[in-house]
Image 1 (cartoon, rainbow, N blue to C red):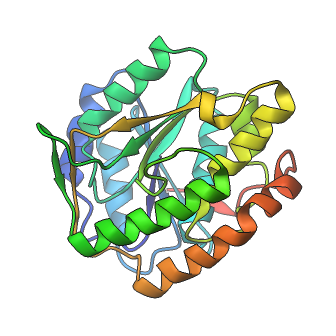
Image 2 (tube, one colour):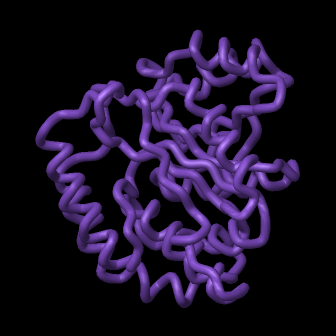
Length: 256
């Protein structure tokens, strides 16, 4: 699932088309988050090219990435998939990495999720500005404290989850955090897992060090949003206890 907000100029249509045509077992669902540019038109044309491998919905009003991701996951789950996840529209993480995520979850059936981690290692190509890297490290440290999990990178926009009751419980109600929803999602998975048995998200989610990632210009994440996200961390664990298992419909949408 790919959340999109005013991505008409940045959406790499040829790469998405190539991926959809080559992926017999993977479908792509685009979520237009109430864009005000030509995103809806671009997605309509894209889906028309590969109707059996792609779909698109348009939210009636802008929900922010948190709302768009939740809406997309809920719609995707109606198709009874094996896995469902989300990928950033700018393809900072290339689509070629999807196969590795799927292979990991296929091989390790005890896992509920696989999430990308932007780690600069020998033999990898991680292109990220120093400022964003160090700001991200501070945020990730705070997120680890909140989650009580040794997680390295909560904010990477490449995540895949096993469809099932734990994921459904985690996305049952709207996220309270607009920008730190990735952390909130992990917190909800952790609580849902603990309620289901003697397990925790730390045993069910694995981080995969990405082989390639690049910082794409035009990000919607402004500095003040990161500050707000850091503030949200203080409330995420408490709110997760209230929200796990609650059910609410997705935002109003129309198929494109």
